[in-house]
Length: 621
Ligand SMILES: Cc1ncc(C[n+]2csc(CCOP(=O)(O)OP(=O)(O)O)c2C)c(N)n1
Ligand SMILES: [Mg+2]
Image 1: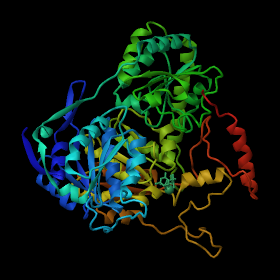
Image 2 (image 1 turned 90 degrees about the vertical axis):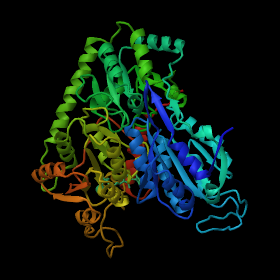
Image 3 (image 1 turned 60 degrees about the vertical axis):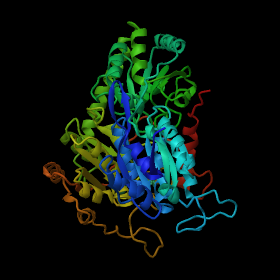
């Protein structure tokens, strides 16, 4: 057997550069590169290997290990999971900085390979700098924290363990059903140890991504259920995008007359102006989608994991006889809501259903009602887009300006705060890739790093990152990486002096926005003084971004024009928005538990409302 003598890190990097995936006959490298920050836990191992193989696989330097995972995940999400990055870190804090990113990847079902450095396998030196010691075992490090947030986890004490670990990791990463974060924990000494690896390990390997089809008898039953239904509704989730099922979904909807509600991950499954697209469904849904969901006798979930936002905390589906059919490549999700599970790829399953269903369609009156909802909703969106709030802009009109200004193919990126709820309802998605919301983990700080990942994945499109002041402050450092890499995104920073979203939530639970404003502490010992003097424009300019301040709608539109002319570096438009000019909820509810006892009358009232709403929560057993 031919062998190649390499360090474990060299073997790993060399192997990664030769992994490909193929779907529908289209082939590409699976790893677009390796993100990393070096420390003593990876500089001599992975760092040396990356330098040696820099012609085969590109190294990218980030400012923060969490941010690099966000960038990788955003990249992979935009690529419909067909390509991602590996992320390397040192041991200790560098490694644990990636934990949040790992959880985000796994929750959103997005592939990313994490390579945290680990303490010496040899142990002679222990405790090393940044080592967490345990009195009970030496077989533990902070990297064990990755176990619950990874789909696959391993620690490689010996270089030859790579030979069996890597195929297992690759069995998970490109798998539509299994994917998420994969963590290979790499002790710093093991990374540098040499071994005679089998040469065939370094040959090009293509992993075919299957399109599994559902069980035929389940499919026939599903057809029967659909034919029996009078008021069915499709709930489109992220799986529609990942499977690239948009076109077949559109044919399915047009042929069967079944309307669609979209989850955050599923938004853009259909264009906003497809007549039977009711838009956002659930806690942040449109009136039409939520009314139809409430009455529907059949829900067809496609690629959705039924988060509480999608189901309005299990209150969205109130028809006593409602049944569920779930099309999902992951068995775990397919069985949710006590559904008839069609375990399979969304695209081919819809193709099969389309044939099997024949000429059946919903009644003209039902379709007419749904089309009416679509039209009425668009008028509501326009009303909000047209608001000219004084003296500060409202968030809704700002979303309207970005939407109207951007081209259909451009991408809007967001993750946390009050923006996601407004965007879910108000963003007119014209292209399946146009709406990028990380709402599985809704992680403050994802926005800018994520926007960079999307821009790297698709340089033909302009990327608009919509970010609140809170999220911006939590993680803005990848602006520097974009400057370094000549990457452009347009960051629209909405300054409302703190957490408008949680402030509103706090009010709704009777707590008056406590702790959610960016204000000075005063003699009353509360954070109720003047607003903090944060100069966001100077802040992003200091990192190297082209920065524009805008106050009025006219200034904001001019700023967008100016932003379009800038090339090869990030642009940041800083604008103040009115914290109190918030969007409405439409026919929906979200379960946030309220204090059962309190001396505060507002809390008592909130609790009463809470208990009344909670009665609508349903089990589907
Ligand atoms: C990492 C992280 N910490 C805390 C939260 C809880 N949280 C959700 S939104 C939010 C406030 C966001 O503030 P900002 O970005 O200014 O947006 P705004 O609410 O003002 O629209 C907080 C603290 C979160 N989603 N992510
Ligand atoms: Mg804010």
